[in-house]
Length: 263
Image 1 (cartoon, helix red, strand yellow):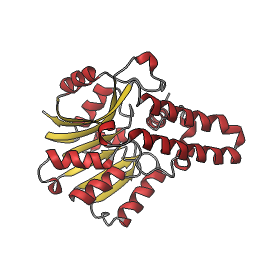
Image 2 (cartoon, helix red, strand yellow; image 1 turned 45 degrees about the vertical axis):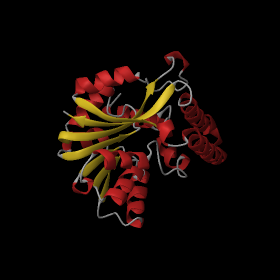
Image 3 (cartoon, one colour; image 1 turned 180 degrees about the vertical axis):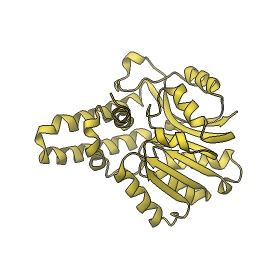
Image 4 (cartoon, one colour; image 1 turned 90 degrees about the vertical axis):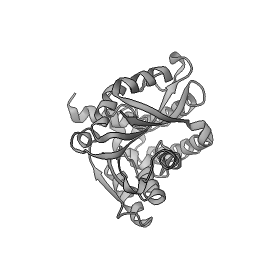
């Protein structure tokens, strides 16, 4: 598999797609959902609580999706943010929304593989990884890559999850969750201290949001199936993956957002 193919497969998996064959259809399937994975208000609150003078900071949003987190922290905190994502439709919407919200002077967005982004970007106060799975590699590799883009004593906002139940019970099989203890060991090995941890269920009605989003995706999958009936199994495999992940998050997996500080 080429590096580009590998990146596409990991990108697809980060959006709960079983195969990169679905990538051309993801923008359509997800057109009704602005916040893809992370809670922008939670991330904004973590910055406001733990980072002084955020208006003087600059952040790098890796796998920024439609820019929900970037735009929220620019609006609420006056922080400058650069976001990158591989899907052009997402970046187009991020730019349009930033302009609509009058923060386009604070936000910039680029169509780019985040693996390339972390190779060239340096000197950020904050890096953001909002539910992008293993696009940057397994957890330790991911953390070591991201560490290079932030200053010493800089910060990382990480949205992911940890295994609280039994791994054999996890329905979504495209991602291997660490336990909380394993995450803490990995953070320490990569050279990060944990400043804060918030469980998603504590911050919002996660199940209701996921149920609503899954219904919207199912409706779009029906529409695509009427246009390309031969690909109906592809579209509804995606629906099933979304539903499996949502079910995991109320049974064996805890959605979590960490604020980490580089040592």
